[in-house]
Length: 450
Image (cartoon, rainbow, N blue to C red; front, side, top):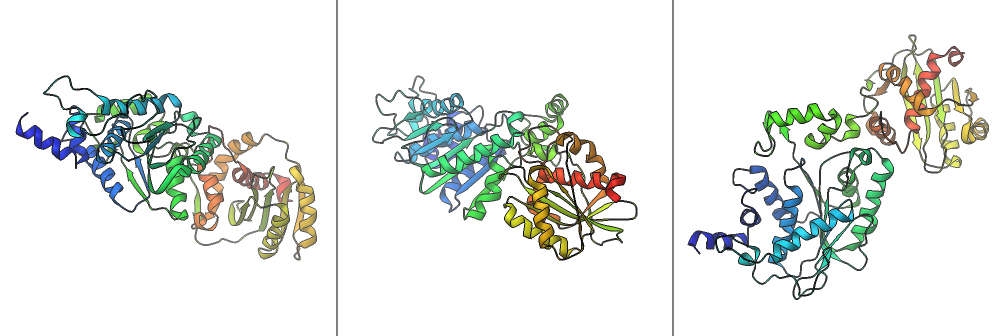
């Protein structure tokens, strides 16, 4: 063995990118700067006090391969390491596990080619460990487990959890129920397996603002976790992330082949729901015009998980709507009755239109007892198809409804519901767009202005 190879093998024990180069030299090239950046980020994350790392990388840029080798490197440095990985189904979970295991178990057949045992000779798969998704190293007990949302993690504790590409297609990315199930699996199952001071790495292509990466980035810091985010786009400021893997010509060809929102999500890390949202434009205001009437439109919650949505808006002389206040809550009617009564009085609403569906009639009677102002309350039955109503009135809403310039901070749940409502796809909640559509119907029909 020449001196240079010997030095490189020694260096690989301390430096992850050097290790990756020795294991897969054709892919981990020294001029692929983004791979060096990922390797350095992974190393630094393990030594930091950060709890979670979200790593967004375009397809075919080696994210799964890198995490597989990173697991091997960590096992070589510490045979007591316990790693659990999660993928979107059992087949991929086992495939990931086999990749980690096979690297460690590779037998030397050519003196000129470096294998794992040349770098970490004391790290070996325990004899008799034939299970591909749950195995141990020599001297260890249950070192590695690969699972999925349909698999099990019972009885396994991990110092490192790796979640690898949890969404399989655009249908799932647009399915709020599937995305919610992913988050519940992550918080209720995977995090419960994390040992004290353990760490989590989530590596994925962005699909939705509500995918696991998006939810972790938004929610986990609020829950006290330190979250680091690395976001890599295929194309940025006139430069490709890696021309070797995907050059500009191939990138443009892909964009022409697939739908724009999927290309943007997969390669530019722009969530598909933001790209494929029904509402493209939201007009805002900083000053209020003169109003001819102050309205309220209320859609009471269908079920306990839906939102009670009550919108107060002013009507201008040219019949445009300026949003003044929004109640968008999952609280029960015993609370929303009081909230809405206060809202109607505070804004001196002239007319409130309340859908009589789903208990709206009873809700209106209770509100009428509480209000002290002169608001006229009118109930009506909404019989038209909700999705058709929302879609057919969306152009008018974008052109004629104005929101305060800080509406994202004033009414965050309403803002999020409007921004992410999909033109195509399964929306878990449609209460905010439904009530906003009611504004269009109110101002576009003669009976609405009566």
